Length: 251
Image 1: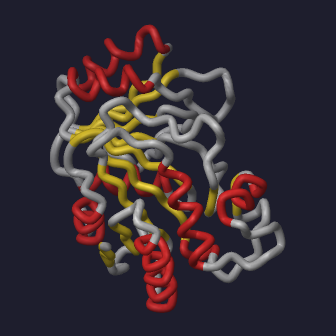
Image 2 (image 1 turned 90 degrees about the vertical axis):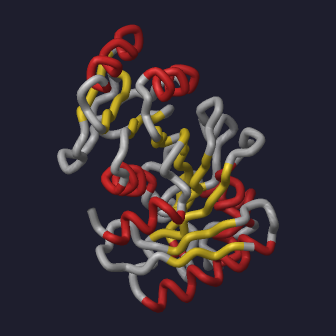
């Protein structure tokens, strides 16, 4: 377990409860890094489609029809520290999401310390703004982590970078072909959070800050974000870069 992963676990306040990860630019990498860093009982799942769980994830994998999923998860949870679970899908190369209410039930029944949930989709892009039914949060979620890649700053808004450019235009004011700024990224992060339950912790992860230059830019994004008041903590990190520093910014 890398030190950066342990730092990230604490910075994102992801040791207990149901923590949903939303946005773009490293959601799945974040889920798997947090699961690996946690020393307790962990559930990993999604309320939306998710690619097959990677071989590098040290977890029991449960993929079953929705009607059979609960029993299969409970069987695995009896012996495994970490259980990654999803529903079967007819779409190739993807598993189907689990009903949010069932995730909440399995978190309790499986006695998981934390359940980590992918709660929206981004088609491997680095930035997004939510659709009308996103994010798909689990009832009783205790934390939401909104992710964006700092490395979109300075690039022109395009479908190559962003999921649903029209939605990004709407929430940020940046038009396709225009250069993305720290303020634009902050606005997209804010939009991705959606409506959260009372008392739910909200944190922004400004990801891919893998060298001093990008950490400086991430600090600018964090400043823009915290000044807007809705999100009180931002974390600059690179979840796939061993040794990259983890910096926490708070309002």
